[in-house]
Structures are given as C-alpha cells and as structure tokens.
Amino acid sequence: MMLTHDRLKEVLNYDPKTGIFTTLIKRCGPNNVGSVNGNSYLQIMIDRKIYSAHRLAWLYMKGEWPKDQIDHINGKRDDNRLVNLREATKSINSQNIKNHRKDNACGFLGVTVVTGNNLKKPWQASIRISNKQIYLGCYKTPEAAHEAYLCAKRKLHRGCTI
Image 1 (cartoon, helix red, strand yellow):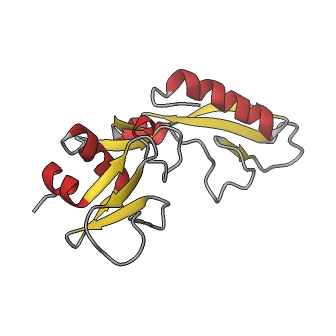
Image 2 (cartoon, one colour):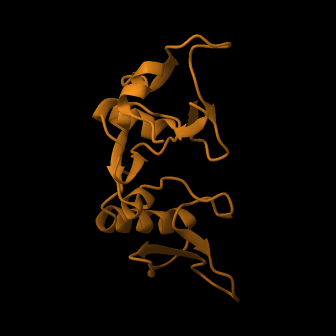
C-alpha cells in the first residue's frame, strides 16, 4: 500500500524552511527522524517501509508523489528544504552534478589526464550530451580544461545550476 498524503501528515511534521521532519507519534529517541543511507540521502521509515526524505517533502507540500525524480538544486543530498527541491527527469537531474567522481584522479569535473609521450597539453575536457561523449579539447592545466567544461556545461546542460 502506497503512503498517502493524509497518513504522512498523521505521523510526521515537515518544516519546508529547514527541510527537517519531526515525528508526531510517541517513540523512543529524538524527535527528528531519518537516517542517511550510503549515498548521503536521508531516509525515513513509515509503517515499516523506507522512503527518501526528499520525496516525502514533495508529497507533504504538494499533496501528491512526484511524477519523476527529485533533484537537489544545490547538489547537497541531505538539504531537503523545499526551495532546494525540484521535479526533474533523470537526464536533467544528472546534468546537475557539481562534483567530480571519487575515482577522478585530477579532481576536476569533466577533466581527464591524457597519457602519452611528450604531451604539451595533457588535460582533456569532454562532456556528455544525449548519451554521446563530446570532445572539448586538450589544455595545459586541469583548471583550463575544467573551465572549458564548465562553459560547455552552462550552454548545453539545461539542468545545470553552476
């Protein structure tokens, strides 16, 4: 059985200015509810089922479940203030990435190091559009490559907020 708007409001209170949920039912422990999963998203258990807090915030404020994904505009997965949440397609949501992956050795989003003999411009910038990798050029520094990536991202990614 899917959680309803009415049931959610029976068991939790949500403050849209802080993004914090508090319990309305007596329980052991603190009044703030939820725990962070391995992906840094806050999760809340209601009636023995686990829900993502950002989706619950949407249901609480809009009265219906989101039709698509919920994007954290500022990129902080534990910031569930209503002003930081927007409904987005998977594509738009993925375009709002602000930080490089953990396995990115250079530390810059959209930049990889090119290996080879005697390269004067070893830093390559590229961007993904419609599931296709687009080459943006090679640069002397990772910062220059990252700037080229950001310029392209701002033009080509509708979901970009940086």
